Every structure is written in C-alpha cells, then in structure tokens.
Length: 104
Image (cartoon, rainbow, N blue to C red; front, top):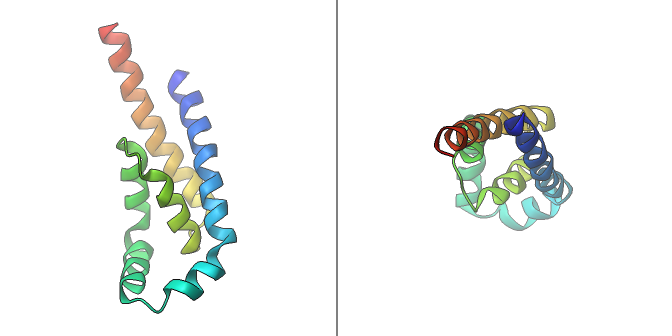
C-alpha cells in the first residue's frame, strides 16, 4: 500500500512537468531546433524514450524533473508517460518498502 500511494503521488507530480513541457513545446522547438544536438536528442528520445523514462523513474535521480519537460517538448504520449512513470516509481518504492520492512 505504501508503494502504491507513494508512486501515485510521485507520478501525478511528474505529470505537472510533462504538462509544462507540452505547453512550452512550440517555444522550445522554435528556439532549439536549429541546434544539431536537439535533433539528435529528439531522435533518440523518440526511439528509446520509454526506457529512458522508466530508468529515470526507477533509479533515484535529482534531475528527473527535466525528463518530464523533455518528454512534453517531444510530444510524448500522456497516457504512455503516466503508465511508464507509475510502473518505474511503483517498483522503486516497493523495493524501498520491502527493504525498510526487513531492516527496521
């Protein structure tokens, strides 16, 4: 139960960054699409974005908020984002809850 509640709260928080990225997509693309690295990141994110997001959600990472912004800028599916982040966060918090129960 702890893992589920924690992962839902965290996922909904991450959805805010996705929405910010979606709302600023046009401005960001207009400013950044001239750069070669932007096109390279966009291509790789379109190919491997799901795995990148899952790994970022599972592994503790203070920079993960930027992943949601990037996903929004690159027009990542909202439902797919939600499912991937929820899965990664749930697995992470489940492992942490089990470790806490075992060693507490």
